Image (cartoon, rainbow, N blue to C red; front, side):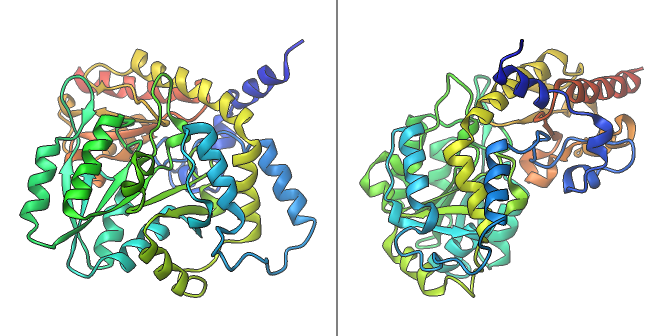
Length: 399
């Protein structure tokens, strides 16, 4: 007789391509007929039972105006976020510094809009997820891009290059660093020493640090996630940490994110405009994220076992001519296709020739030219079909 854990894993690992193709979410609906959706950062796995049950209980009860619109004490998720961070990462943030937003992009936009001025620069590592640069530009700030590069041992950034970028921006012109840790799309889980170098840079140049840590719960052993705000009181006082359940628990459509706002001035500015200015998350969204963070870890453990297997599966079955460094976190594979000679954007080749929709590398900036991003957050049969189609297309290309 199978254990409950094995039964749950079997259910997660038995997805049907036909059923997936009928989903109305962006990942599959945008792919088109007979095209496998492997692009946007949603996993295919069904929602954790604990989350479904919590939302159903709330839906059967009071759906009126909630009592927590005043978030000065951290709102309904302050203590939950602080306890989860303590339990998983050994760092205890102040729960009263938590504020809620509908998603990471909105929280980033609000923070930069209130803490920087038009024309000022925001330091960003590239390749960068497309919405981030778009947000910076839409509010009239300048993205100051510095590439993360593979030095042969792993993806990393050059602190000296970042120092020069800040200096070249002019006195008082660079006001913030936007950090994605773990990094999307490369899957790098930054080491403490790397983060400490960034912290020293921020302290020297008086930079606000906005740290997107939404992939933290998906860090693969033996790597460990290091919260940026855990690097010391001075660092915490200038750091805004952003996270949600959108990646680890597949809750992107729920629309609930947490911002832990260390700088008092930024927190006060958010509080003065919260509500009508930035919108408010709904009660069902709060219940979903609360359930994920308090009761969802057994499901997440099952998912992490599948993702660990899948990230190695990609390495084993990757078509000849593609290069890939196994990610240290997440469910996204950053594939180097530059040896295939299919142009700067291999996405079109795999879409048209393999009937697989991957995420365009150039959409992540010039550092993504010749790359595509593959989502392996799915069951083995779907991943194998994806890799088979890609391999067949590459073999035809090489004939």
